[in-house]
Image 1 (cartoon, helix red, strand yellow):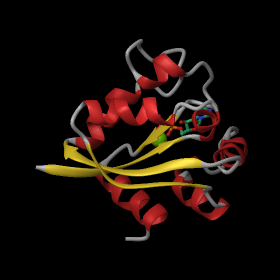
Image 2 (cartoon, protein in one colour; image 1 turned 180 degrees about the horizontal axis):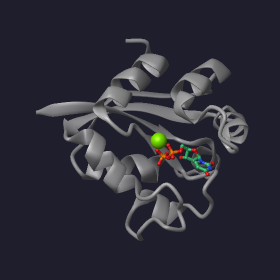
Image 3 (cartoon, helix red, strand yellow; image 1 turned 90 degrees about the horizontal axis):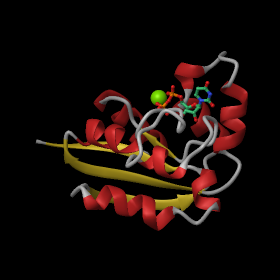
Image 4 (cartoon, protein in one colour; image 1 turned 60 degrees about the horizontal axis):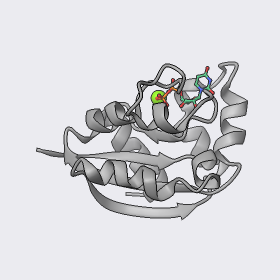
Length: 134
Ligand code: UDP
Ligand code: MG
């Protein structure tokens, strides 16, 4: 059964001109784009999206970074889309991410790791509401 997930092309990847390549990776697997928008993330949206990390040493930097420039916000749909997207993205630290994954192929540093994807169906529902208000 189809599932929805929230995916974001992060500011570093947008600035580097990687939007098309990254979206292509998701479409290549058969995931369907349901919503797609280029725009800024507000500080409120960033704080809500990353609430689980509040208080951690990297939190302030993470909020500054994700609000620093335009991102591509997407809702992707497909069977097990949450798990499929996480697998396509690769490990959080691009240096640990396998070649062939998006972070492995396009990233080098942990704090600018190219792409975001919800980590569970519950997170997906919450994050879609934060960014698309539904
Ligand atoms: N992050 C960071 N430093 C860390 C851990 C995480 O800058 O030590 C950033 C990184 O951009 C990551 C985001 O915070 O994507 C959220 O961290 P999480 O552990 O939830 O990783 P993800 O779910 O994105 O793989
Ligand atoms: Mg996470």
